[in-house]
Length: 148
Image 1 (cartoon, rainbow, N blue to C red):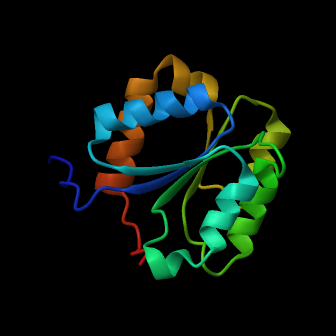
Image 2: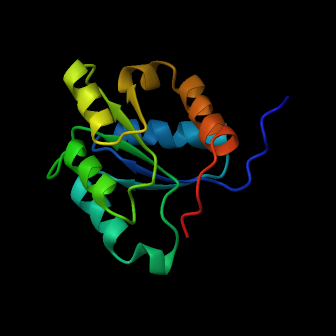
């Protein structure tokens, strides 16, 4: 049975201080996933301000967040903690992307509410396959609530 057709482009929030990694992920999503709306921030403070600045009045919340752990100003762990205690953002799936393969980082991310933890080395080595898998899962298989 074929995967369901995508009903709408995903609104993805990408939070990563490495601009090269962000460019690669954006390019890979465009190549594999079509017309997704990707909003990018390179630090946790700016991303949190975006999510708490009356976003519901001007548009919709992201369907999905890709979050690096090692960010300037506020690290990804604190961003994740704040996302998961906020009524407005706690239901948004967060995929942690990190260069760390340390067990304590992986465990802590899940304890804080991450939906998934993916090593950047896997993404960068096989970004086409990985991003296509993300795209297929989150836009065709998983059911996401409306973010309006």
